Length: 479
Image 1: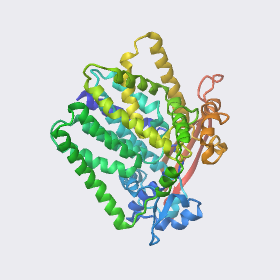
Image 2: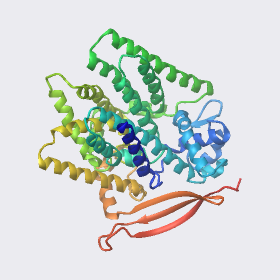
Image 3: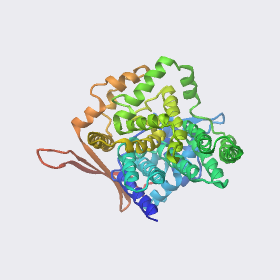
Image 4: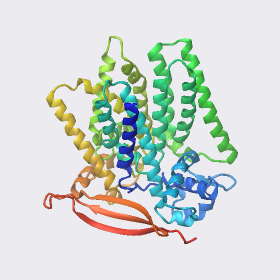
């Protein structure tokens, strides 16, 4: 019971932290998901044909794909918009919004705020299962709570997954639920069927999530070897996967939904090269501007954990078997993301394309803490925690585009931007030190955005407010 109550507290703290400021990360990856959710709620349709003129006139043609019958769909799978619909519905009800026209939605940032709340909700749900998985391998609650705090505040979960409705929040929730079910399952086959059903969903959300399909096979083999039970359980997982993945695929075919990322996949494959791949691997992990370990150096402890497990000769514990089974997924994520032509994830923070693998590093880092015994090592861990928190906090609460506007365009420049852009993003953030707090509320017949800007000051010994302004997002009596 205590564990359940703590999981609820973890969820509430996470959701509050993610949404304390509703300032979102504007991205064309989230816009189509938001439009699908709004269209389903207000127009009872998932295609975006009714948005076509607005999208073209607004210079956002890249967010849509058109089938041979001229019907317009979002470039990202409509499933993401469908899964976003319940939170969007609740947000609309909270603000008292019964209907919005396409023009009201398109010309207002309201849909991005609703999308941020949706992403934050799903990401917070993923936090619950990260905590429960960590608790499974710990006698007390101190270490699971610490590692959950690192997951929430010291990684790109804070500044990327929870900031816009770009599929990462939904992915993380489904994946962590899937991992928890597989880890908790005993000999009954029903949990494996449910895990398969969930896998059919998250592989439709993001193509890279298919890498998690290797996990149950590796986990079952690690625990009990190759037996009849292995084939029975994998068959049930495969059945569940085929049901949801197959149903969604047939549903898309019936609707005539084209695959929006086909050209990007083709380009990534045809332009792949070993030298470029190696550069991308180094950059996505270590570079100053987009490196996973630069933003979250604490996760490097996971490498220590992996090394310790690899060297272990005696019988492995349940935690070690779990980590042995899931570690290859993290490695495959790095390989996949580094093979993608836009490995930086567009105009994004941190190693965005590695977001779904971050929990694996958290699990490995948690395991590694048992080897951190010396006082100097503990001080180093505490120092890197503070650094990671501050950097991820700043990148979450600043999110202003002056730095990104000066990036050199083109694929060939991605690695240069990652390492040599002057100033580097962390330097820019630390020098400016602005903190933006945006909130949205309803007043009479208007939905209003309040923007406040703060800047910490040693001279004034506090965090003085520099700017406080309100603007109308939507006037609800205008139709």
